Length: 238
Image 1 (cartoon, rainbow, N blue to C red):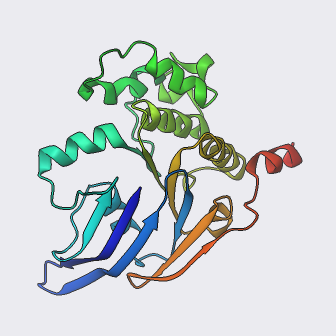
Image 2: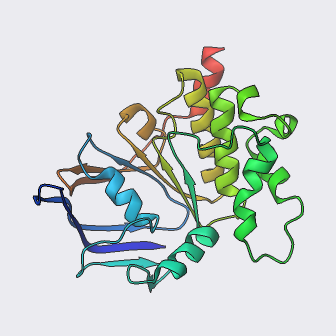
Image 3: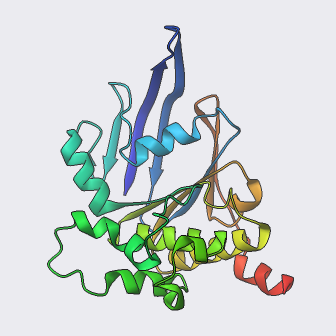
């Protein structure tokens, strides 16, 4: 579904100094994979996620193929339409509107949708993350783990081809982190393509494949033979 061909990204600091965040990254992600991108701070993880999510452009010369189409050269409006239709985002910070119900937060991406029918999509997305009984609660009435589940539902509401999760457990306690990973695993089991960006090896171990970045380069890419099952860990800690 995704193929990166020799992708690089260079930034210029205010001092005029050039910093190469990514160096000739080539990567293939098949439909239905649950991939972890790991690395220390400054390794290029966030830059890579921004390029995968069409939030940033690579340097000229590389290619980003999504479904066989080169999307790295799309215009701003075309990229925005593709993000809305094809890509769902989950961030470390939940980015929920504080005075708006869970259901209304989840339905926000539908404001830009051209679907023929939108009825019930938000409710179904909340049901998928186990929050059908919290639809009308505001973020202040929800725990951190529940807020992140609302954010996952919002990312799912347009039924995207790709789910990008950037440190989704970074602001959560251990139990809530397991809840989130269990949801991501269940979505993967249903056929969702998920890319998890994390510095936490314990969270990456829940995925089926791990790519490690160092200084902007891919230094390791290997399957995880036996992913840790978050649901089993939840049961064991009860």
